[in-house]
Image (cartoon, rainbow, N blue to C red):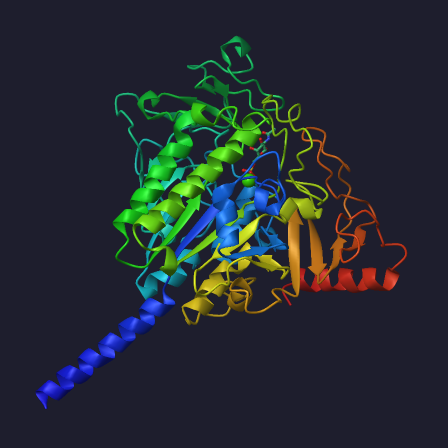
Length: 500
Ligand code: NG6
Ligand code: CA
């Protein structure tokens, strides 16, 4: 009898662990920064080639209507990790470099969906969701942050490359900080120990075109003031190598367990300072070269998965946090050398914009054996759905309200269903409603074109209405000619805003 029970136990255990293995692929979420729909060759770019990203698409599925939740970084990341639209919550706009953590640690987040299923979870790269509490001392324990939100490991660029502090944070501490040279960060009162771009432009190797004229670090003036902490300063040229090495090490270390790696690039955000080995890879200057670098990073991840024989059991997702921008504040030749390259492809607008170019970005997934190679889907997809979609994959329940705006679209992600979301709110200061191929941008008083970045905003006093099925570039405003449709869209947007 004893033996029988033991055998039964063993059999059950074996079956359970098999089921678990089949349902718990590793998940590598690669998140590019400011990479536009038209910036990679599998979406039509010809001035730059992206063989690694193209390989993910060739071996998986490429979405033509995949979206970031917002047209800038912080709100997109907020929504992707919490499953809640950022516009529902105050304080989720572009975060300062010393902003406190903007996600309440008691909230369930994306990694929390996976941890109960035996996943190791880690985030490497750009964070930009704030860290610590108000007035945190960067020399001490940096918390709360990703660890308090459910990631077991983090290696971070705290905010952006163009914001201080220009240091890496691993788990709860700045990497390589010398206690005898403490670091100070300020986004209010200027700190005067180090020269600024405003006062000492002669010290700069890259000059700002707008903003970005505070403390100079590594020959580049940033947003915000910083002093001390010299041993910990990053070198922009090495950033892609540093974070890629950390990501590869993370995969190696966790190869025997299911793992979730959120690998968040700095590229191709400003300042664009690729490593010298990528300089001149394209005719487009640093912006194009940074795309080549980002593709190389992607290659390292794919190679690591191959080398460790993990590719077949890993869902790789490649996407971007918002649409493209050419001049985002530094004179880096991006405008002059753009040539015929179209960062947003045929889409109107870009980063910061309520037009499709603001949120519609490369969105690709690979899971050999589960996703048919070379598939292309026009399902309406959004990163805000990752929490509910991963929960669907885990077959796990979550309480109503935990991921309030997130929908499970695993079948669409796998290419088994042609439809994704029926509707989506796109967010760029104003809100836009997508309902199928209809698109409505709510009225707004802002400028039609942003003066600094020269991007069309989508702001219009009377609102805008488009039928993307025959007008994918949002050229023909139908607000006046289709009053019934306009009203329907306005009403629906109001309902979703009030959470119905
Ligand atoms: C803007 C910055 C821009 C970029 C952006 C955040 C200026 C003039 N512009 O305020 O350069 O840093 O914030 O980009 O400072 S994001 O991709 O992280 O959202
Ligand atoms: Ca961004």
